[in-house]
Length: 333
Ligand code: PBG
Image (cartoon, rainbow, N blue to C red):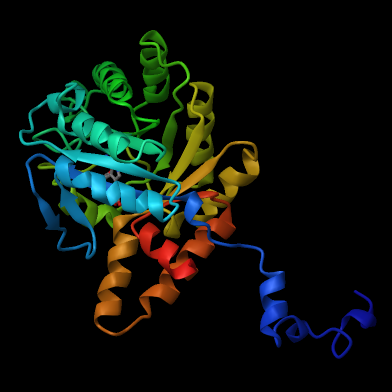
């Protein structure tokens, strides 16, 4: 670089003295319309139970979901993503494939309350199985683990049932090989070839999901999810293969999860697949640790949340799933 480009000719603080200049040169802005709010729906009536580890988030029964969804719509949020907690769990998660199941009731209630609101459904079995794993189990590999191919067929049935209930977008999160293809085929066969799939393509086996497992009552009874979710110590190469395969199978939008400890993955996916809508899931643990620190007076919740979400956006995620979605809309208004 020539000496002209050195101090004192160049002073980067000139871009920082005046707040109007600072604002002008910002490159990343949060937009409530690009945020998706997760909501937990449980069987029952009149239920609005706060999730202890996720202050400000509730398990709601379908009759109380409508108000929450209308509020999200009035705030201009981009969408909601629904998780169901059935009255009864079983080995195959049968509530999730039943047209009268909890998630189907929730989808219908949400669409009725706010027809223009984007309603996404999480397509997975862990909330619906009594063992808490993301599919049906067997031990044919020598270990008790999720049976990949047997689960694919059930995933197709589940997604199709969500589609019939009125979901606008289905989001498979179980990390089964071939899940996007199986769901695409089931949707196409059932008259839903127009319905998009947002795949949790690069989903890591993460301790940051801790509070979610309280929220959805879905901690695995035995073992963990390392037999299907990605190892945090694997690099972006494997994440890119996951994304590539899901796109080949028909995924329309791609998600990386969790977000904050995986900004490198978000960036690499963004660069390698610039034309694909990319979401990141700012997961429960990322939310709860800030809430806890803020409650102790150690952090400023709003400032930290905005900084985290800005970082996720700056890394390359155009869409962010976050428990702060409603608050962000308030902060920005
Ligand atoms: C699986 C699912 C999980 C989350 C979203 N979908 C849990 C898991 O994989 O164990 C976690 C979300 C969060 O932590 O906020 N259906």
